[in-house]
Amino acid sequence: MSLTSKRRVPKAGKVSSAPEERATFRNPVLPWLFLLPTFIILAIFLYYPALRTLRLSLFRSNIILGNESFVGLAQFAELLSSPVYHQVILQTLIYCALVIVLGLFSAMGLAWLASRPIAGAKFYRLMLIYPYALSPAIAGTIWLFLFNPEIGVVNSVLSSLVGVRPRWLDNPLLAFGLVVLAAVWKGLGYNVVFYLAALQNIPGEVSEAAAIDGASGWQSFWKVTFPLLSPMTFFLVFTNLVYALFDSFGLVDILTRGGPVYGQTGITTFLIYQLYEDGFRNFKTGVAASQAVLMLVMVGVITVMQFRYGNRRVHYGA
Image (cartoon, rainbow, N blue to C red; front, side):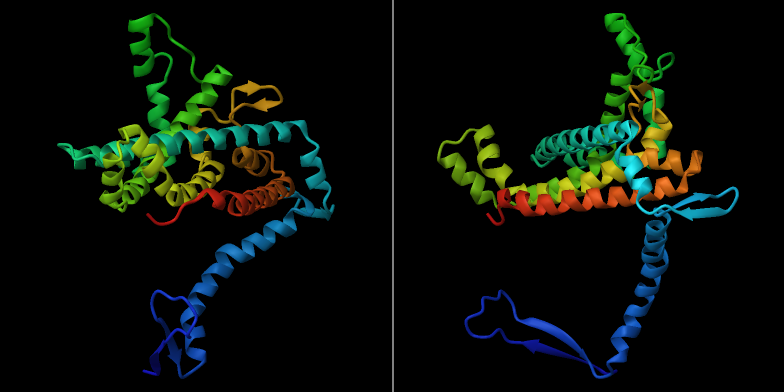
């Protein structure tokens, strides 16, 4: 085996926590052969589709007749000047903000409660993580049955308590709120797992020092625990943003199919669902490809801004 291992000693004046280890191959072709399967998979399933999507966004295509014509950036201009697309973008931003804020705060509170030394804590944690194991289609079906206006459990309880049976999926605001709550519930287990791990890594001496200084439970959480959770919160903001943008399709399709109509379009028609409608129902493949490129640019801009400005409020280390 032509593989050796070298250990680099840090140079004088450089701060390093551990000596750097680097593998050295005597045959320079060997590491590229190890990486070749990964490169092939990435090229077939990531880079080639991305390049095809970018090319398709510049052409107006008709998949039935099989022809296409180059239109340049005309489809981007149409989208950015469309009142329908403006409403879809606004709805998506509100939806993402609500899913991130409600999801992270509820997960943080539940993880803090689950980290307490109580009887049955393992079963309690398992029940919190359980919704994440469900597929979006199954989660949407569960919520569809729960909030069915005729046979749903929620309306049966409301009818017996206050005498009302709301039409959850027919009222625009109720339908929007229902999709938001379903998305928060679906992603709750993922957030709880990471917050539980972060809480268990906080040294107990920190909380004990706050208690000795006379801090109440709320002051200890807000002034000590919450800042120490900021690296995990910083990470979860982006994972929840990606989840809200790209993983909402299943819930929307099962619960509302983008409706009910409010203003120019359906109130639960978000960017990913609008892309699906144009690409696979209206067969506007060029417009759908343009929307995919715009979504990629939007996520990139938000990520750069968040890393540039949001990182200043993150505290690392206890």
